[in-house]
Amino acid sequence: MSNTLKIMFVAGGTGGHILPAVSLGDWIRENNLPAEVGYLCGSRELERKIYKALHVDHAILPLSGSPFGVKGVRSILRWKEFIFSLVKAHKLIKEFKPNVIVLFGGYLSVPFALLSFLNVPMIAHEQNAIAGKATRLCSKRKIPIITGWNECLYLDKKSFMPVGVPVRRINLMDRQKAWELLGGKGIVPSKIFALVMGGSIGGKPLMQTITEVAKHDSLKDHIFMLVGTNEKSGVQWLSSNVVAIPPSWDLSAHFSLAHYAVTRCGASTLSELICYDVPGVLIPWEGASDDHQLANAKLFLRSGKGRIWRESENIELLEAALLEVSDMRKLCNNGGCDIKRNDICARFWNAILSFSTKGEGSIECA
Image 1 (spheres, helix red, strand yellow):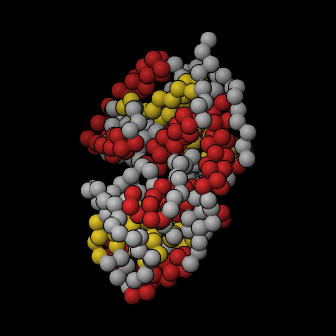
Image 2: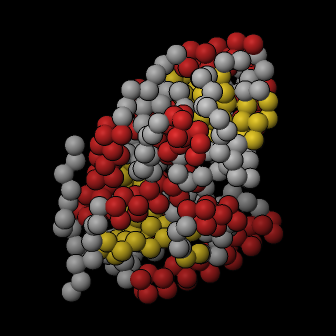
Image 3: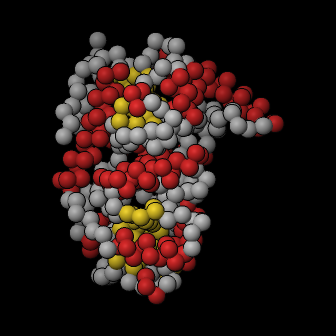
């Protein structure tokens, strides 16, 4: 019998579900652990683009969203997709023969929750501080839940195991080298750099707001790096202190330059700020289900450094938050960052092992 642990990662919908799965897969490979990981996503174009950008092979279920909460023709089409997805999911399980299936939340987890009667161990990872509908369904189906935070609304405290949210590896470097890697010309400006990340959904309004507030005189010594707003290589100056940066999986150069971040409040992004000790101005996306981004932001402030600004508030309060957070400083080095990242991924790995059909080879956490 092979000693290789076969793991199926079911991760789709948005980057908030996909990035933790790929980050954990990278960590497993970096540590030469005896595992074969297969990835599965839905049929949305956004999901395919994210996996393509990450250079990760993946299978696709013919499902573009949850059949619940939609009406009319759209509902009929979703239910048709859902039935086909149940059949394909069953087929993929039989072909891949996983020792454990890890559900990373979102609509893609629902077909697997309904297939939990199969003789294959499953666990579900809830990244956010508020359990989504898919996670609540998994809990009702007696699928073990692991979480990104120590608290998770709608779940009883005894019903889940906190492990954290896996984050990608970021190698901090000299600021001049980082500037050149991003395509910057000449000597890196001796100004305060803000890393602006809008997430895979809800990013455009955030970028517009930051571009507007950057015009204020008090922020002339700041440079706002808008990540993902420039599809061309190199940096593109939009104004004297706003620069567009191409999207990238590897944010090593970005984090090396940043004195602080301005970001939406997906759990994956906030976990990276905590892990790499980057203070943040947190701007929750108002369209997030159950307002989970605000809940994430509030929990972040217990272990991270930053301030929350709501888009319903005036821009002067945002200006004040930017100035206050820019005075906070990163203290973490590569060694400290690696310890934090390894601890999160090791806890996750041990949870996978404990629920798999093999259950051997745990790793000691810090």
